[in-house]
Image 1: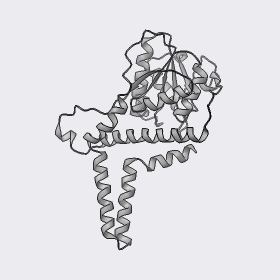
Image 2: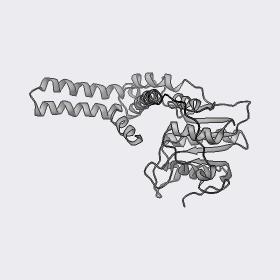
Image 3: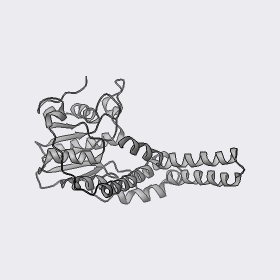
Image 4: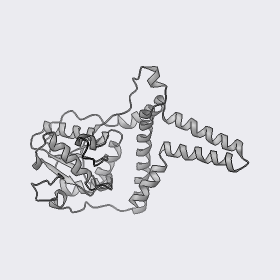
Length: 279
């Protein structure tokens, strides 16, 4: 089910969807007599690609989603854990560890470390499964965290969580009633908070990786279609599909999920104070 969800959602992203539509129009022109319809379909595809790559559109749809929660500055409460949600990586020994993490993952990790250093004694929880590689995403983030000076005993890994739902349930089993700061991309924060609250947690949000900005003054950057603006639209649409999937999942299940029981040793790959990392 997880793989099917990922395949379907990938095809429904703005760029693949518009390209599929364009190829459909081309097929109508080449293999049928409905050439006028084919031209209209191709025109719709091209206009769609322009629109989703256009800053006034992409920033307008993404910014309200990103600004639902304010950035984490400080709190008078004591903090026990800072949890950084995963966001993709590659395994390549020829590049620095910081380049093996995706940009959003690196920004999330940096924010988590920043907050952790504000509260001595706080533990850093890193989550994410392998994603088809031989190293889990949580372990890859831990490798970078160690390089940035985070002590090994302060790192906890959740290496089997594939999506936000699993991350929330595993965190609930480990954190229990202790105070948690949740770090993820600003566009993902609303859905992440919903999942964690439904798992019985009440984390403090710490959004990062803001993409949408309204103060783009240079007209050649604002009105020319660009890949960075396409990314903003894709982030927005990805979250909308995630919310739709969450609603369907909750409607089908119609049950209250209890936090799963997780052993810390199983997550770290060693004893409670040992974090085993790839060489």
